[in-house]
Each structure stands twice: as structure tokens, then as C-alpha cells.
Image (cartoon, rainbow, N blue to C red):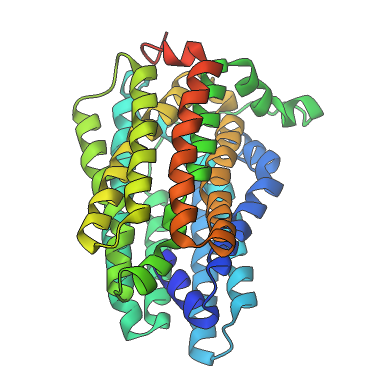
Length: 375
């Protein structure tokens, strides 16, 4: 809901595709600045408490967006500042939430559990954007307040999680411990390959940042149509993640990973040149389905192959890779659209994703040959 409301309100205020990209940039900057800190917090503190505090901060930021809309003082600067605050809270929450999963389920169930976690998130991404578009039609403040209520409810649910009490080691904070998450990933080429592949593939293929432009200027639809476009990738992702929860990936993970990235790039190209609302929805659905396959493989590998004492730091670096591809990818798409035009920018991104998949097959042959999660 928040993504639809911010994107539509900002584009209505400025009419700038570049500003839509800047939204991604202001979410990305706090993640970069805080990466080394949030990993330490996730490994030293109660991960549930970290998640609860972050949800409260996000709720406060959304409430400020609502009050700005009601008071008439909302502008691009205030939107960027509040989105940056929400992005900072998300930077702390992501590694803590991801590292919490292995504390709840036994090791053999981590992969299907991750698929269920992703399916829950994708369900929200289906309902949220469509509902956000409907609520925004009533008023941006209504959409913002509803999203804020959702963050509060998420905090309540996080407080209800019960895990076995774990005594965390209090090793001294040294330069080595601060950078240990990055060093761990760098020393494991399979982890480095999966994370960097996602980083560059999604960085180039970030078409979803330009959905407000497609909705209004190319496909001729309104906020509700934008909500449907935003929901389409989640529909494909939800169907695929539920399937993977019932039938977990166990073999030929490397080949499956590369195939999913190639399908992602092809779907991006189809969406880029489409002028049909139905075809655009179909392309985005396939895009989401392909993306979730690589996501399940990547997240499961990171959790299964990382010791619990380091999961927060590794997850923080992983979140940086993911945030770089998503938030910085949105900025890249906005800049490319401003320079080249919207359609050429998306088409170029899809072709770039295909090129990255081919290059990574050559650079990481061990990833191409990867069999199971434990191998």
C-alpha cells in the first residue's frame, strides 16, 4: 500500500520519472550506511525486539506521511525524508527477521519454511497494492493510515513469536568482527555468486519502479490499475512460492537459478514493449514467478550455510545486495528513463539481465554446477 501511495502521490506532484527513481535511492542510502551496524545488532540483540522496534518506527513514518497529506504541506522533500526514515528501519529489520527463521524451524525445513515466508510476503504484495490504489482514490491519508495500522499489527505479531532462548556470544566489537559477514560471503564463492547475480540482474531489470509511468502514460489506467500492475509480480511469486513450499528444490539448484534469471530478463523485455494492459499483467506475473525461484535458492543457501552466531551479519550483507538491486535499481531505472525514455530504459534493462546471466555462468562455474543446498 505504501509503495503505491508514495509512487502515485510523488508522480502527481512532480510528474518526474527521475523522482520515482530517487525514492529507491533514498531507501538505499540508509541501508548502505547502516549495513555494518545492523548486522551487529541482529547478532547481539533479541531479534524479535529489533523487529518490533522497526515496525513502530515505520508506523510513525507513515503517520507523518498521512499528516503531511492532510495538512497540505506534503512535498517531494518531505516524502524523500520520511521514506529514508522508513528505509533505515527496514535496514535494521531485514537481517533480524531473516536470521530469526532458523530459530523457529529445524535445519531440514529451512528451505520450505523460507518458501512459506516468501509466500506470505507475496500475498501481502498482491492485496496491498490493489487495496492501496482503492484507498488512495479516497485520499492519500487513508492509504497511509491503513498502511501504518498494518505496521503496528505486524509488530504485535512479531511479539507473539516464541523461540528457544539463545544466549548470544558477546565478542568484542573489532574491525574483524564488523567486516566478518562480508568476509564470510567473499570466501564462499557459491554465496558470492548467487548474491551478486541477483544484485546485477535486478539492478538492470528494475522495471517495477516505472510502473506509475506505464500506468498513466502508456497503458492509460489510474491508481487502481497501478495497484493491479504492482500486484501482478506478487501473483506469480505467490503461486511459485507455495509450489516450492510443497515441493522444495533439492537438486540442480545452479541450473534452476540461471534459468529463472533468464526468464526474468525475457519477461522484462516483453513488459517493456507492451502497450496492452493484459499482456503487461501477464509479463509481470511471469517476472515475479521467476524472481521468487532465485530468491528461495539464494536465501535458503545463505541461512543453511551460515553459523547462527554470524547469521545477522551475513543477512545484513545479503540485505545490502538485495537493497542495492531493488532500491538502487529503481534509481537506475529512473535515470535511464529520464535519459533514454521509459520503454528503451526497460528494454535495455531486460537485455542487460540476460547478458549478466550469461557472464555469471562463465565467472562462477561452481554455481552453474551446484546440486543441493548442503553440497
